[in-house]
Image 1 (cartoon, rainbow, N blue to C red):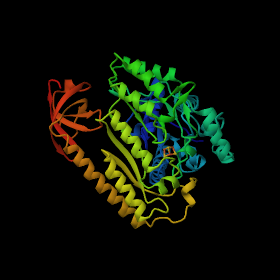
Image 2: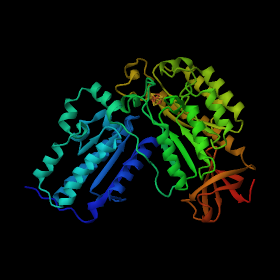
Image 3: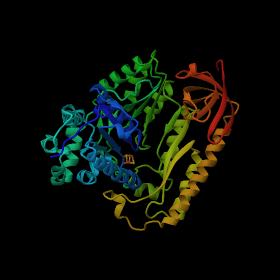
Length: 482
Ligand code: SF4
């Protein structure tokens, strides 16, 4: 019979690894709040932890491979810890948990939590705490505790027996719930998830299969979270969702929600609001009007175009055209001339010809994004595009990706260069890692500025004169006002 001796430091310690999008980071922060409320505390050394949580991303195969690598590493650590009679419990959550379930248990996870749901998470913690509180739990008891789980997501056997479609259905309707607060205390910025999942089924994307259908959060809950953030002195909020523009809850659609947020933030510490991600087919003229009307909404939009060829946009199931995207950005710029735009670009989609690719480049030339997240296509099993013929050879994908990166670097440099001589207000984030005399600030246009200044400025929105550019970072000095 195996006995566990849990060291005092490990009794309350957890360690987190988070991969992927801002939504994952926001959800990790919410899980940490649940842990902290139960008396746990975060450690930056997994050796001191009783619980390791890996919040995963499935968007790219490389992200999944990385997590399997981490699991192999932690399986070895778990063995070593077991030899020392000090258990380490590994919980995997996020998109890989939804997609791969039992396979993760086979690869070293003790718990797999498919969706963010506080009652499931609490159930897992209760099991671990039962062991922790005993401090000396025979292996046989541990097995009994794990197998007596009332949650399907906790059992290896159940996951194997699940009908995948039924699991998907369960994810959408039964399990997911928004945490009441996602804020890391002390931070001047906060994420506020407003929806979860996606109904768009872009043909290359795994997200609708891992996160499930769209669920829109109750506006009253969103307002309650924002009020808490204002009480805590937060300066900037970012509304999060896979496709925020399609938010709808009862009669409240996305522009109506923005109106509510403008009203609720007025006269509070929250001076800036952003939202991510925007889908060009769903960003309405009303949304643009509401943004333009309320200065709390930052003059920056991340609007994922993905490609510039109508043939490829259609194959990607994006449901807008190059022409409608150009019209949309013209309307945005007409309403808010000072706005900056950023985007995602995906090259090397099956069937992409040199002419198609050139259209991506000409669209970039036409719009001139401040920055882009650029990728080449890699097939994801389970998505509609997985079986498409005419895959682009790897060397061509790589060379096209390099060409879009080069073009974007030129645009970024030119746009930032044109800012030298301007003065701008920016939120002072903290001390630069490179030079402790300098403070790092971010403008509402999503530009980074560093300037020498007193640490008392951290957390304020300060006026800065822009003097120069180094790399993609603007340099400046603080001024009294603009
Ligand atoms: S909008 Fe498309 S790319 Fe974005 S999450 Fe939904 S399916 Fe994926």
